[in-house]
Length: 478
Image (spheres, rainbow, N blue to C red):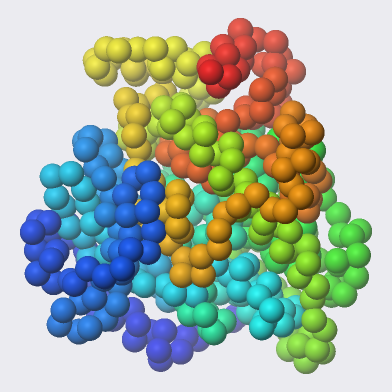
């Protein structure tokens, strides 16, 4: 069955005339825009609301500090990708300016905040029909990216934003980890948020458009139930659940959810990536196309979803922040290396922890000394230019203080070495991982729990006893 995707005139007109954004001299910025209030501030820069002097249109300008050459290259890569993404469900880049010390990214101003925060608000009644509407929009945006051979690689609730406080229209943001896929060039990565990464990332196998679809399935599961399908008591257990695709619909949260929704999720959370539904197939799925009026009458309980959001916010302000400095170096394996064949050709070996660790101690700047390590010489990677600023206020108008939830302090002390309670608990261990291509930012990379392998691979038992892992643990413990 062919599904015709229709966008409102407002959505289409909001895109304006298609243009390729070229980076212009920085002195032109203040000639074109009036700088307004600060929306967020972080380690890598600041976001301001700005107004176009001619049209009066409000935008969001992110000032990304770029002192080093590789920092600028990273931002330019994201600009290149965003220039390819012309779709109503994807955050749009409007302008870019380069100064000696920073690059200014001017993007759409999105005032509605994160989707999950909106649906748990007291004035919002969440139904299964609403979930279908949101998932359709997610799949529409992902389908467009995939048809342009671009993978997002960081689909998670924080990267789904509402356009306004009252709108049901959403946009996908944060293309900092997105990559262009090339024919006959396998790509392997080792980054992600544990709850949302698929088995192929954990096992260091080639990724593809199917990698995003696993994350879509996890997002749908969480949206409907408020539960994280693979969350274990610690990161290692979470990874084990993912590699086995070990989840169920037994919780009472799914009692009121129709079978078609469960079938939809089951068709995405498949271990073998080639068996997963594509974004286009998702849009044709029976659950996404049905018109059951009864779905609008049953209100879904959002209590567990509220707990999920609290845990995610607390998680960002804990181990992930403390780990940023160390993990930025570990996870700086460049896309430049990937484009040169180092990111995962057909017979490329798995990058060892030892080679990554040895690269940290190097002081030489000679490229040939780094060629075997899989790590680029970059200790201050910029955060994604379209992502929320991850320290202080977020790039979301519905700001909520990221504080430890009431009653959690005591639990945190007793569970510091025990990790994350299953599914909807409030305590958490770190967000992972080492990266073969990409950057390290809170919410994407963090410090693995001491005593565990950073990734649970098929040969995890062997790795646990290796000198390389012991060196890694010693480094992270500092």
